[in-house]
Length: 486
Image 1 (tube, one colour):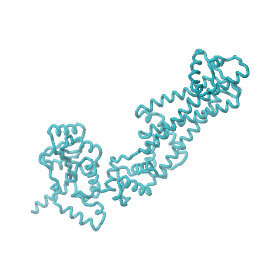
Image 2 (cartoon, one colour; image 1 turned 120 degrees about the vertical axis):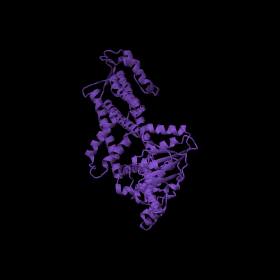
Image 3 (cartoon, one colour; image 1 turned 120 degrees about the horizontal axis):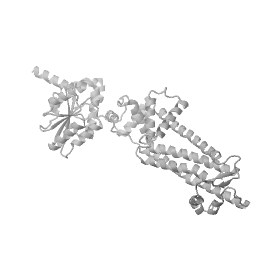
């Protein structure tokens, strides 16, 4: 399995588990890097979730869809020659009509593709994407009814095709499909034209009502430039003038004229239409593979932040015990008693008196809890306006120590990390983190897991473990009872 497939499979498991990674896939991850540990867990999780067959099915759907459409475009290109150029009873081909029929639409579609490709996000919102997904969905229903066999089929389907046709691979993938279909169409037209010219004796003419002969002479000279340099027999200016209705040439000259016009038509269709499409198809095939190799996981997502705390738990903080010991019935009671017997969790963190307190999206109860602990009135950052107010006060007051109050139950996110980084407006700024909870961590195993999430995010914000603590409502009750009992 390639690295791209490993990462795609990991993303599939993320879609299944949503924002709550399971702690059921236990193994020894300590000696592995996070990425290796992640892939090892993916292999274990795959035994339960069976995501690989579903993704393989989606990949086959894409290939089958492209193959069916290629066959359709090949047939259209093949039948277009006999339909629009020559019939069984016909003996003449309008050369310039053939050029307009096969090359002009190709050039026009290339211009449209270039416009959509270089306009950001345009190709991902076009009807082509929606039509492709609609046809693939229909093909899926006709080809294999797997939707009832996997409980997460729809979610995986939406993710996979968003990945293939969305913002990441969309431009390259849709470009590849577009050039593949046009190559099939032009290949069918070229092969059909060769067959027609091999089995029919036709004369080449030009017909027009409003255009002059000079237009056709100039167009022919442009088309014959490259084949003429390659030594291919192509029509001259006099041949263009002679290619009129009713003009009879001697037998030998007529045959030479047919060959020269045939050479130019086949060369034009192959070199000016089919070859560029084929080259672009190969280019975007390599582009898709290259982007697949460069595909990386967004490890800043809350899912991976939580997963990292599960695979590589942080156990060296002064007020945190090893979470694995909590699963051991013989050690859990001793661990909890040790934590309860520690009086005054907030005493483990000495906060400067002039520190600026700042609450981040606290509800009423947690905000009141933070107010009791804070040495001064604090701002609760809940929107962009309150955020700007707090940052302006920090900078205008030349604050060097900041205390952040957050709800332990809340999952840390990138927005929180961005705000913290903005607080480092000077190199000497020191940030303290106070985690608020309504109960002791040892009474709730999920809080211990969430605490590890906060420690992981705090590390990314350059907040050292010596500057992190937590306070609880239970702790206040314990301390009040102690004071009453002397």
